[in-house]
Length: 159
Image (cartoon, rainbow, N blue to C red; front, side, top):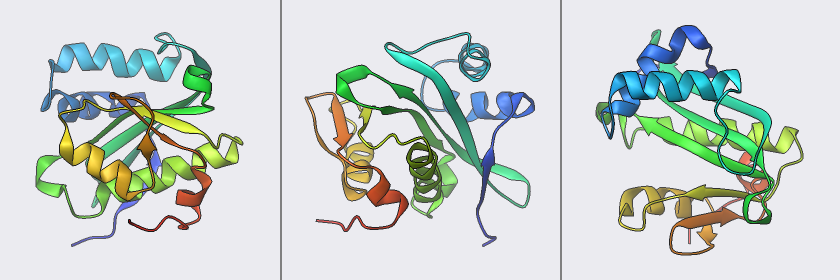
C-alpha cells in the first residue's frame, strides 16, 4: 500500500471531493456547490470565521478522502471540523487519522485549541473515531476537544 500524502485541496479537486461526499448523502452537484462555496468563502457555517481549510489525502495521485475545518465561535470553541470523508475501500487504513492529524496541526498553527465537531448521535463509527482521538461529549450532537494540539503532538491516548 502506498504512503498517504496530505495536502491542501484546491478548486480543481472539488469534483472528486463532491463525488466522495455524495457516497454518504446528497448529490454530486449539491456537494460541488457546497464544497466550492466553502473553499471560496462564500458559504459560511454558523458562527464561523474566515480562516478555513480543506485538506485531502492521496496515494499515487488518487484522492482517498478529505477533511475540512474552520475557525469559529460556536459553543465557545476556536475551531470546528466541518467534514471528514474517506472512500469506503480505504476506511480503517489510516487515511482518516492522517487527515485528522493534519487538520489538528492546522488548528494549532492558528492558536485554535478548543475544537468541536457535529456528529449524528447514531453514527457510532464516527463518534468512536473522534473519541479515539481524544474528543469528549459536549451535548448529544456535538463532541469537543479541549485542546486539539494534543492530537497534533500525538499526546492523545485511547481510553
